[in-house]
Length: 332
Ligand code: NDP
Image (cartoon, rainbow, N blue to C red; front, top):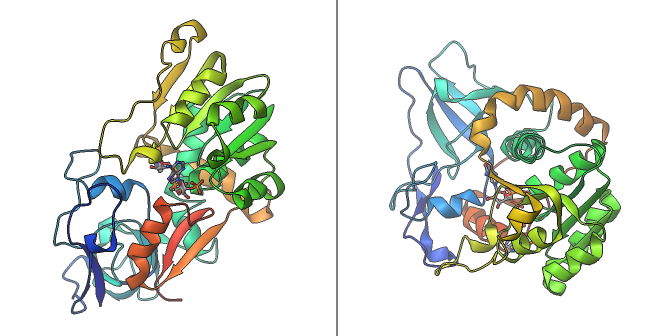
């Protein structure tokens, strides 16, 4: 078995030195436990926060111990009636090839219903984030003009497509390459998109949204958030989902400098944590899975192969190497 441990805490952008790749014995399940061989694991931006020694909604990773995160695996040994060898389960013991789990902490998933990888992406946690963030946190309503940053990523790509399908007047996305901008417009049906690296976000957003925006779904923070406030219409709503432009910052970051505009524009800005919306999972899957199956909602996945390349996949996620969900394939 192989596992990835946190070797040290990063200062700024993480490097390969922050990870240890360690060979271990395959663990044995005790009573009430199952042994799982992981098939696919997720790398998520929130893992950057857990590399810091800071209290947050999920505890920091421990230096010298295996990291954690969403994964789907196959049961190869079971001591409980609920799980049989060959079952697939979703769980939180990623970053390793083999995991012993308390059976109560594993959720059965079915690859005849949807590909196993989608339980970590479009039909899983990132998908629910997009759904709850747009509909609950941002209080989206038909006729709204919606701007989403990180638009070619796992969360952002679904936000934009849901807004379009639910009757947005105009959907605008930003992403970090010309190819991602093309993908947003041509493949995902965004009305407008721009590469935030091409020039000031405020100018590019104002040009893409001449009549302003009503909803901003923030995955990036900083300059993007400032630009969104500047383009916001009266009674606009901002869902703060992520601020990935700041996760590697070593100093406090300045923008947005225009928060005073919240007053005259009566803007609502609301933090969003997907864990608060877990009760919507069934409703979300019931609504979105058929749209994914029919192709009305498209999703992309970027796969990196092999547990030893998981750190590289994570570093790639932070620098935009992914389109759609970034995943590590451990075996097929
Ligand atoms: P993505 O699939 O969107 O991957 C991250 C993307 O961020 C990269 O592909 C890259 O794309 C972009 N990025 C990296 N650095 C910057 C930067 N400096 N400025 C702008 N964009 C940057 O990840 P997820 O969909 O999983 O997550 C998206 C956001 O949602 C993150 O901020 C994450 O923390 C947050 N999140 C929050 C949750 C919650 O409960 N609040 C739950 C899940 C996710 P590009 O090429 O465009 O730069």
